[in-house]
Amino acid sequence: MNLDLTGKTALVCGSTQGIGLASAIELALLGANVTLVARNEEKLREAVDTLDTSAGQLHRYVVADFADRENVKDAIENYLRLVPDVHILINNTGGPSGGPIIEADTDQFLKTFQMHVINNQFLAQAVVPSMKKAGYGRIVNIISTSVKQPIVGLGVSNTIRGAVASWSKTLSLELGQFGITSNNVLPGYTVTSRLDAVLEMRSKNSGKSKDEIALEMQSAIPIRRFSEANEVAAAVAFLCSPAAASISGVNLPVDGGRTESM
Image (tube, rainbow, N blue to C red):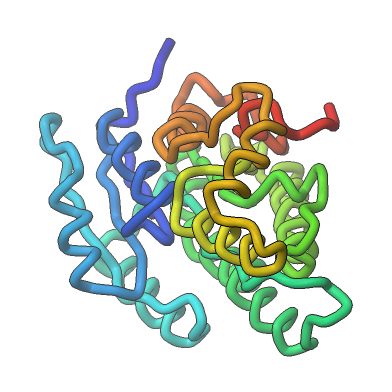
């Protein structure tokens, strides 16, 4: 199986912690040059130092705040002047706060749409030309199992994640002829700061402790535990590899079997 990413350059968003950082680590282990993108420069510096360099990889970082469209645009355009060839794009941005969809302010939808769909579109437009030139491209969007099964209490997230999935599927239809794939990885309950926020919210709403909520959630997962970030990252890295060249336009749950739909 060809998993070798030597000579490939990967742009990984939201990569100072959680699934984003874990994905960057896995891609580096497969030989890729990795560029981390996030808003906290201190954390970016620390994260870059964790990446494997045994194959002579050159890792970088870009400081960009995904809540500020112009900031992202300027940061990525400056980066591409230095590194014009990008072969892998990992779109990964934290989700909005939870709550019933009927209570969500319309501005929350607009802000979340901007952070996810619009930024994804800009990034894809920025790097697809170099992917076409190379005849090799991988776009992987880390979203949520809510694409297949909406999660109660995450109304805005459910809505926007679904939009990203549709966007990605459309890309796969348009770009496959150029050797570019577009796929979505759908994490379930994964040990990250996002999960801790969900536990906190459910504990507050129910009056139960976070440990009690965690046990209830784990009981609904066939493997009876939360996934680890590196387990999700392994799926991300595989989809970026040459071995996954014929996999495109799919939504891949990595959730311990919790999603009930096929």
